[in-house]
Length: 324
Image 1 (tube, rainbow, N blue to C red):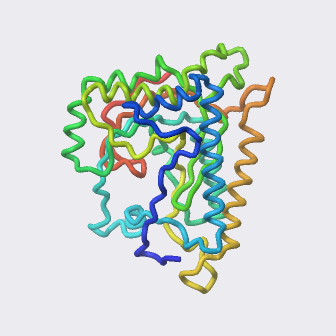
Image 2: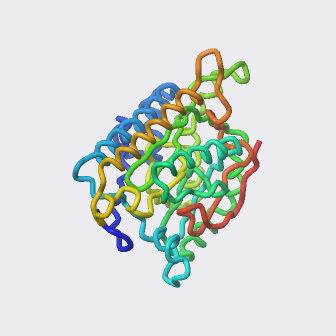
């Protein structure tokens, strides 16, 4: 296991595990919708398959006797542990459209973060005010001047894009912790008529979060910008914590060695939280959904067009859209 502070980074590949074949379409979100016959139930199934398969794969890797330790982001590690060092800066500028979670989700995430802290006391927690889900990433890890150029090209459409969720409402349900060796996230799947309780017609869920992502991609590319996103996999997630040290899983008195029992304790805590989420916050036929168990994107705030060093919830807002 690598030791602090010079920690190698093992990149987690953004692999689509939903079973959707690769596409040469100009819009990468089209293929899944077509493969699912534009059916919300099938789209939800692909999102669920992806996150379940990914958790299973990550669990196997973490519990392997050969697990070398967490994948530590050296930039965040320095920002947290050496904030006075003039070299502790993030130079990776990005341009994104974020969905901001409403208060009831922020409260749920706060509870989950505290539960995780029992197993990983040194876990870096995303500040509640910085929580976000990336609906569309235009680009990442470039210079500020490159972002200036992209913003100039997009400028006229930014109000339309950030207000888009006011008229195109996509609902997410079934919160679950997703994880890998670098971070933990609260993930959702597109709704498919669950817990309607007479509030809306079931057909309203026909416009899913994947449709929203498709539309945002289409609107932005029509302005002439080239989208250089890291991932288009079927996932709807908010990062809630990152691993910034190996200390929580190190063997006592044996620097540089992973304690498999401590890793197992962490995985068990994640699975306990997921069982609790499913029991308390997933839809139950005839009973609706508990507050915190669903999220209609755009609730409280529209999309947040954000630029700058946004990796850990930072950066600056160009425009915040209208919420409902």
